[in-house]
Length: 178
Image (tube, rainbow, N blue to C red; front, side, top):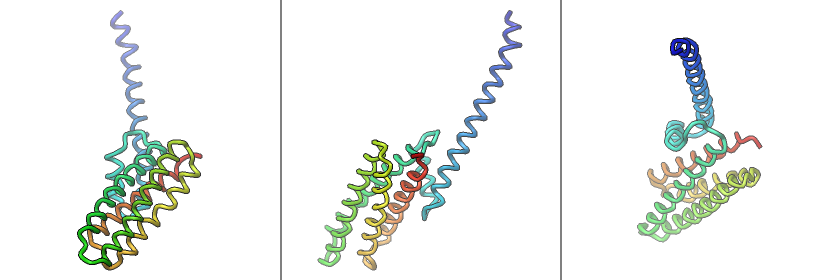
C-alpha cells in the first residue's frame, strides 16, 4: 500500500510544487515589471526601486503600490517640513526666513493634499485621488522656485526625492483599473 501511495502521489506532489514555483516566478516577474515601469518615470530610478522593495510585499497590486507611494510621500513631506522649519529658525536674515516660510506653507498644503489622496484611495474615489495627486508637484516646485539660489544641496536633494515620490504615486494611480 505504501508503495502504491509513493509511486502515485509523490509525483503528483512534485508536479504541483513545480507548478507553484513557476507560478510564483511569473508573479514576481510581473511585479518587477510593474515597479520598473513606474520607476522609469522618475529622476532617480534606483531610489524608486529601493523604496518600493523596502515597503512592498508580493504580489504588487496597483492599489497597494499607490497606497505605499502616497504613504512614503507623506512621510517624506512631514520630514521635509520639519527640516524647513528648522532652516527657517536658523536663518539669519528676514528674507531667507520669509522664503522658508513660503516653503513651510507649500509643504503644509502638500501634506494636507496627500492626506486627502490617501482618504480618496481608501474610499475608492479614484477621481478625487487623481485630482489630489495632480496638485502635489506644484507645491514642491513652488518651494524650489522660491528658494532659487538660496537653496542648499540638502534641500535640493530632499525636493528631488519628494518629487520622485509624487511621480511614483501618480504613476501607480494611473495603473488602477477604474
